[in-house]
Amino acid sequence: MRIRLDPWPVDTFEGQLTLKPFAGLVFDVETDRWAAVPTRGIPGSLREVVVVDGKPRMEARLLMDDEAGELHLAAFGAYVVGAVSLCPHGTRQAELQGVRARRVLAYSADVPLEPTRLSPLNPHTGVLDYEPHAFRGRQVEGPRGQVQRLMLDDEHALSQHYASAMPQEEGETDALPETLVLQDGPVRLGRGGSAVVGYVKTLHTDYLGADRIGLLSELRCGERTPILRFRVGDRGGQVSDAEGREQRFTWYVRLCDAPFYQHPLAGIMRLEMHAPEDSAFVPRAVQSVADLSGALLHRLGSKLHKDARAPQNLIPTAALEHAMSRSMGSLELVTRRIRAHLVGQGVLA
Image (cartoon, rainbow, N blue to C red):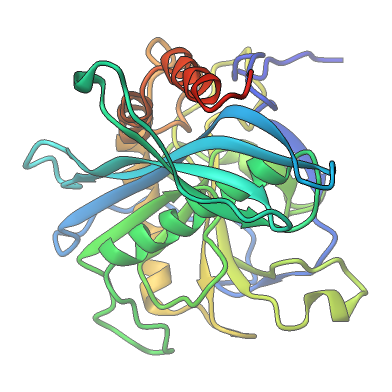
């Protein structure tokens, strides 16, 4: 037996590698030959790459009782979405775009709430405005889920704002976008047709199966797998579960070679894009993006001595994470403000 290291830190929620088998169907669409696709350079026509990410945070859990004495869950929370704009050819400095915190008062739909403003004693520390947003049900994780949903919606809107339109017709020749968006995580549910690539840093779902996954360990730096297609929510054999759900193109790329002591899939990232319904072909634009993805992500990949989640936590993503944390402010100070506000309202927190 040979023991290898999962390079991601143990204090992350999950490791980089778990590989739960995907229950649905996965189709070959680019080629029937399952072999590495060589890396290609970044075309000069690609002028801008925008990296989009978001960060949620729970700031205080609340328990409210109504006039009938019934208890309801709520919470103060916050989230930030933002972007980093960069030139893929390195001709200018990267720039942060649109990083701004939004605060949420998430509550059960059974109880109406008004916006809450936390005014500081010191005017230099700023006002905290919490906008009420209702969630359904009374689950303990309801408030957290509502903050997460709002963040993902804003991430999707920001990605669509920056991304170039991308044709998805067969036979389109001049199809490479001028602006490509790299969105942290899977692409969101919604209409495709934009140059948005979801980059999935972890390998929690196995879309390949035992007979194909071996190719990932054989990929050299910058190489990728052929493009595949699957349906979101497909459970295999239960067609009704997948009917009406969206489809995705997906492929794997190696950002860097794995050291001998790490597991052979270290340095691998999965990418995905929206796919037309039941398409038996790969649009030229999608193939062009896949072809340049190896060279681009190798350039943007982080280094282990600077980032414990290297190389998948891209350099622009790490910079964006720091900026988003600053935008939300100190959790300890915000919690004090919330406590002082509740005490001032006659509620002991």
